[in-house]
Image (cartoon, rainbow, N blue to C red; front, side, top):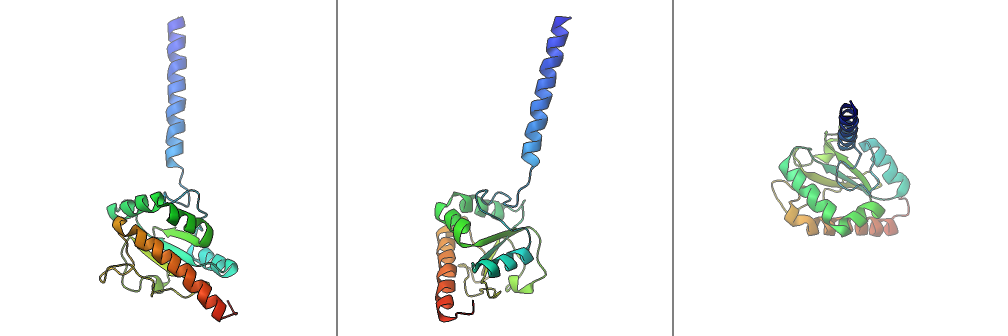
Length: 168
């Protein structure tokens, strides 16, 4: 009889542990794995509002959860300390798995991954592009340093334009 009680208790403990692990795995945060230390906005509209309010550029990452190119870029993005630091302190961050209604966020088509910057004047910065002529706003994991440079460029352009225009 004691063996049965011990077996039932052990099975109960194992079941509780497995169900707890499943709950942990299914919890979805706004980061979607792009950086849990970064503050992410939930919608494009919220991102635009916060960009205006904070006078920081909005960085929009279009991706798909099951896309191998998006997964590879996400891994490189999270491992790059400079990008994580910039994203955390100098940008309003949004990652989307669905397209927005703003066609300006797809200046050369709807593909993933795609990263665009929007300044606080609500202008999509089409001039800050990646390396590829056929997919201007995509980045490969090997381009991660170039993405960091483009983040700095977005930040510097904003600062330069802000100094030239006091209406920002």
